[in-house]
Figure 1: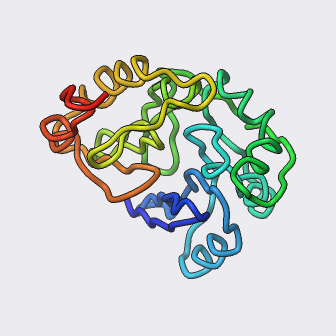
Figure 2 (figure 1 turned 45 degrees about the vertical axis):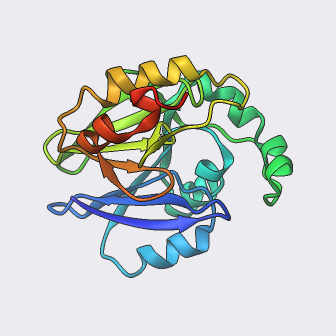
Length: 213
């Protein structure tokens, strides 16, 4: 597996391009904006884009999804259907955060806990992790020990829960049951900031230990 990370939007959101080394099939995770930057990066690589994959519906994670889906003629996959209200509210989100105006759009495929998402030889288990948002999902690839977590957990921190339908206790439950149950060596690829591992966050993340929150 090859993973290219591009920081997009004024929020420095980590858009990921995940590539199967064997087949060169790829998908784009959480393209929050800067579609031209993402397209230009992809032009430097020999890959076939199969889909746009979303962890949740916040604008800094989905802002370029429709433009890229149309450009590559692919589907938008995920998140879980409880996230629909955030897609309904895309115009409001753009106004709130000072983004370029955007019209509502919706995934072609909603995901559920227990689903498997496959591209090339890669197989990602879908885990529902509400708390930051109600329909947030994460993607775990067991063979390569990688989990794409969106805004559930970060290096030394966790996702905000002060947005509509956020729930701090629910988020901590999601982290403890869906992230910390993974092997310690699993790489955590978050939506913002540097990568980390399950083992590091288990022992040092102050929100998990109870020091904060």
